[in-house]
Length: 433
Image (tube, rainbow, N blue to C red; front, side, top):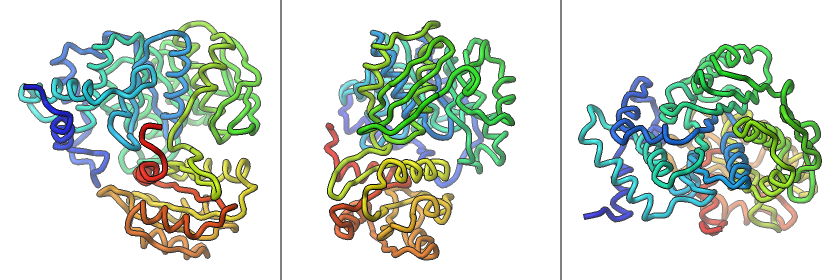
């Protein structure tokens, strides 16, 4: 008898979830996931893979690459993490999330294989194996796969990248990947295989050698071979000029906020061009980028007051968010910040970037995660910076409190952990939008 969707999700959730764990319980290894995909005949080897890693921008860049490939007429599977509102978001085919029935079927097939394994896989390993199998089942032309954490020991790395993509490198998860930037770069360089062509978005001259020596068949570097040459605010997004190894693309409209999205677009376009081995037509680029959407990343979900969701979950992300708010949303009067962080984050550092002189209030809340940093600690950090701060027991309560504090011409900015952004999105945006 086939499983129900509820049973499949319940079975998935019995697995160790390192995304919500406070510690890494086991040494890093690919043995479990390699055995699991091996029992299925290594489906990840039945199509080419564009594999992405980086500290920030992976999800946005993956969506842009997918849009470019789909606009060229390919069948594209995309695997990303984490999800904001439901696990189906992680597995998409031509930009559409996997259906409940298809997810149930593939999860059942994967989980039933565990009795043949020496050790049970983690939740992320099950999902990764399910994605690779589903992409083979629907016969995609190419898979766009986002690393969960790091690269070298990430479950997704049982695939050999045809195109390996590194968006950037900054200090994040240093307790696991670090302690130094060079250590983090080495971990991320682990997705590069001998047959990979590498698109390197990180332009730090001290880190570039780590990637150049990773053994790629070819390397394209930001600032040398490609880049975003012009990047200006436009109504509802950005107007950018992109340069790739094979061409240039002036006046490309991105319906996304933040100058960093221009950098992501340059990486994505270079990755797509590298995959095809030729430039893309201006029409394909215009169609793909003009329709791209990235939920939970500088996403405007309401007006009067203006409400923006952004998963700025690390210091580099907070700095990018602050720059975007200052350059593109300065017309708002004051700012009410809803923020929840995971343990290990420095609340003072995050709020130092996000909370400026026009901050009306900070509403601190715990993310719906076992790793939640207590809201009281976040509120204390805000007060230490001179801001009025209150706490809320849940994200829903925090959003309601913020909306009550904000005036109609203010900005309510919901940020921090993606768990906070996802919960806020559940309240503010239809899950089918």
